Image 1 (tube, rainbow, N blue to C red):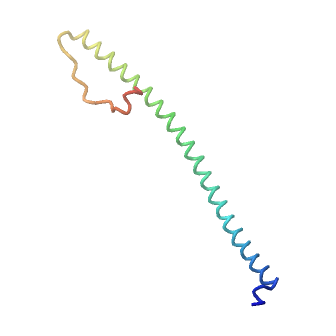
Image 2: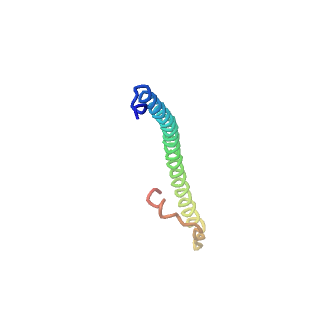
Image 3: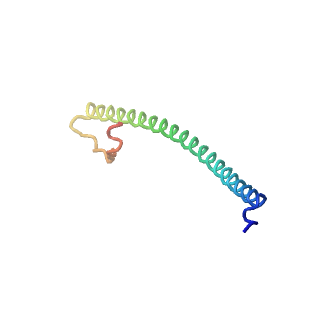
Length: 98
C-alpha cells in the first residue's frame, strides 16, 4: 500500500493523466478548427447561393414581364384570337418573391 502513495508513483500517475488530457485537448482543438473552417465555407456558400437566388428571381421577373408584353402584343395584332394558356405554374414558395 505504501507504493501506491509514494511520491514517485503519484507523480507518474499525474503526468500520465496530464498527457492524456493534453492529447484529448489537442484533438478537440483540431476538430474545432476543422468545424470552424467548414462553418466559414458553408457561410460563404450560403451567401453565394443567396446572391444567385436573387439574380434568378430578377431574371424570372424580367421573363414574366416579357411574357406579359408578348401576350399583349398578340392580343393587339391578332384580334379575336387568345394566346394559349401557360402550361407552367409558379410554385407557391416563389410566388411572393416574384
